[in-house]
Image (tube, rainbow, N blue to C red; front, side):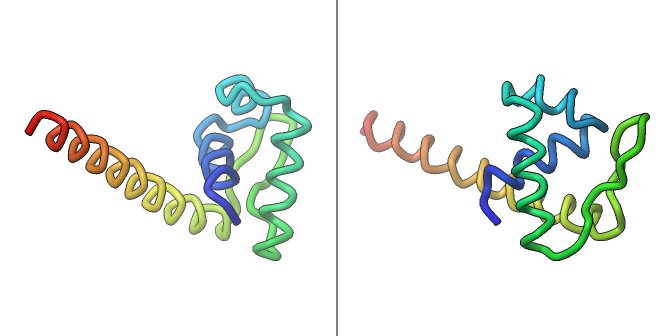
Length: 92
């Protein structure tokens, strides 16, 4: 499981479809589907229910989604802090 897969997964859940997520992520839908399949294989459970109307997270997918959002927010905050620290040091 890597951060890219988690970012892709959260976007799929938030978009409600792979095609919408692929457009928002600027990635081809087959490549996005492949990353999702790898993530599902790694966790050993289906993460999404697929239908003609789009996708919805399974219970396992919803649990992963909440953890992924938390981790990605933490990563963004860490990046922001490091960036801000770098600017403060450069200004000193």
